[in-house]
Each structure stands twice: as C-alpha cells, then as structure tokens.
Length: 126
Image (cartoon, rainbow, N blue to C red; front, top):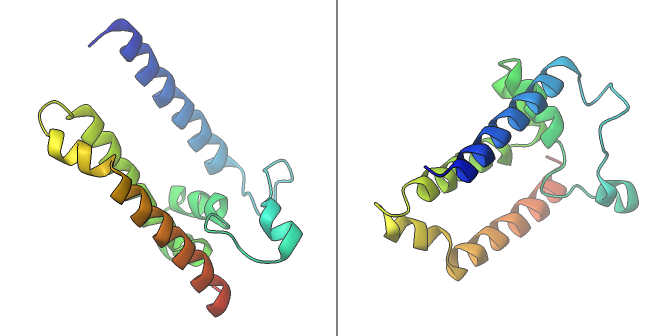
C-alpha cells in the first residue's frame, strides 16, 4: 500500500472516529450546533436523509429501533457504503463487482431508490 493511500485511509478512519464520538456524546435533536435539513425547513417535506443524524446517535447507543424510527434507510445505506468500500479495496481481485457498483445502471438504481424512499416517507409520514 502506498504511503499516500495509507494516510488517506488513516485520515478517514480518524475523521469517522471523531464524528462517531461527537454523535455519541451529543444528541442532534437537543444540541443546537448540528446542521438542519434545508429541504425540510423550506418545504416541510422530509428528504431521503432526514433523521440520519438522530439515527446515527441512536445506533451508537445500541438503539436499533430508534434508528429505524428516525430514518429506516440508514441501515441499508450503511451496508451499501460498506460494500462500496469492500469492492474498492478488492477492485483488482473482484473487478466485476467493482465495475457493477460503479456503473451507470447502479447510479440509476440508487437514484430511483432515493426518490421512492423520499416520496414514500412523506406519504406515510415515516
């Protein structure tokens, strides 16, 4: 592994650890310094990411049900992000997976799922 890649990975791990510590320590629904959703503030409709900060806080405290209540798409998103990282690290050993995940078709599927989730959560009040 090159030195540059090692520093990038180390920086990402440290950044995620610091963010996890922040979200573990402070509840985004009570602390005023967390960013608020502009879409929700302007329109009153929830975007696909609304509730993610509260869901992360709940997950870090072991409250899976609370996380699902705040944003049910978060666990699926975390699995997909993990899959992308795994495919990136194994891109030379598993190029078909890497190429499939980084294709136009995958981008279209992701876009459609985000739109469906956004519409569905606003219809049913999730």
